[in-house]
Image (cartoon, rainbow, N blue to C red):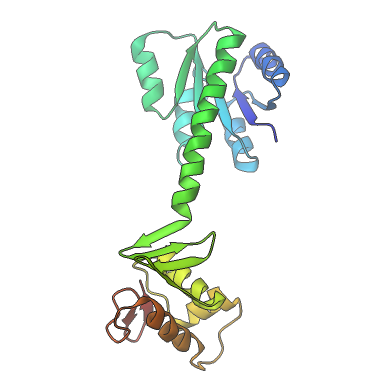
Length: 228
């Protein structure tokens, strides 16, 4: 699948020329002539890298960059006719990853894009690993392999037991009522208390707690529910 590049520049000729360069390299291109249009494209599409002009009417590139950074981590490369060090520093401190001064060569632009994409892919791969392994004290939960271990010892949980533990672990410190646990894990509306959730909590404690009667991981918040 080709990487998707968003070109944001109020100059139609620049958008056209850069598009030709990048399409010849196999990239998929989105184009925007202003900041508002760029933000809409990012909201509605998967974008891997943004080429962003600084000097634009209305919302300038620095403002657009900061707005993108509120919810996105893809590389942003500024394109600017300003070459002073302070301009570059201002651009990078607003959240950009790189800064290219106009005029630039096609070879330099492509090299910078590929370099930033390589770093981004390494970052997202590492983030994926971190996201899918939850560690709390000696408790390790791998949500990809659905394995749980205490220290070096594996704890064998049933699918529902694992789902309950993952729910609580991903929301460490948050108290979940029996009703909320049931609705999130079983995917059904809770209508009566038949002890199902409490039985599962007891079983999980027996498998992960050194002393199930004095749990250190799954705590009971009396009258409210359970939390990690």
